[in-house]
Length: 401
Image (cartoon, rainbow, N blue to C red; front, side, top):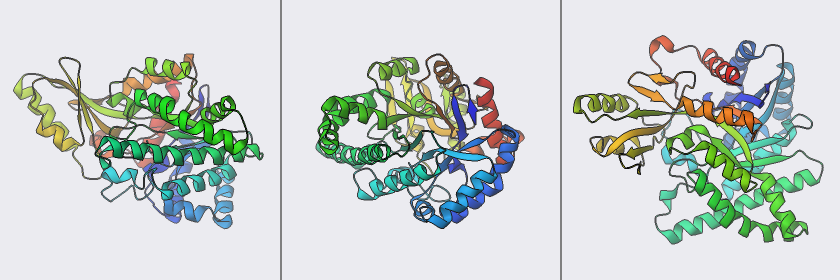
């Protein structure tokens, strides 16, 4: 829905259904109730998540026209999509495979271009669109500096091919669309500074001659086009896990002329780790209850010297839980954003409020997408049916906006 800060929606990766038939059925079941609770009298946007399999089906005219009619009938529209998970995202062990196939492959390139061609046909007239995506690859698949550099170079080349497609679409009268790179822990790009360094020292030097030659423009215009179509997905959960200074990162992006295509409104888990053994053990035991096998739950710990320790998954952090130098943990879970208290643990809800308040005063994005998919962490008294839970999240954000 339209808000003073832009279009607000939720990411439909919360709905199971890896093929289009199953995902569309989940939307038909849940969306009307969500809209009725959030914005019954005005159009509501969707943050559409399509797997590779679902995108193959939706590209066909019959399915696409059926979906467009459903959107019209339900006073809905699509303005952003989640192109990060290529394959299954529910009821299987995802872990590091959420990055597969990564940006070094033609499969990731073809999937993303196909998604943009679908989005171009769904976007309302005059509205920009964006698709968020993996931060090139999972860094631990490339275990030497030369292999990591090669993966970064190859992945960047494929990202630039998407930029070429988006520039061409707009030049031929199509909509303005951008690819939104989403840093996350243990991605090749996992932080704001890493994204900015990659953009400045890899993407632009590699891309300016490519775009200039492709479109017959000078390097200054090539840089402008790259910055227009390759943007950042500012996932608040991911940035909060790394203890990142939001105001500083946002100002640095603005200083360098780098755009934020989408703010993903999401919350991580956090907790202070007391020195007293009994109290610390109680915190660790609570984290242990969150140790589920589907997704990676990277942990970044802060030490009493202000240094950061990184753990690839929650079990490795738990094994080091009695490290007396560590004073706080932040863990990769997309927990419900409407509450900041989860028993003995807390969420990084305050980071969401900080980022949205910065956006109020110096608007850096008009695409706002709630991405919560870890609902099982709530105590029973706070659990609601799925449509009610999503509506509660959206209304909580709307109140801040």
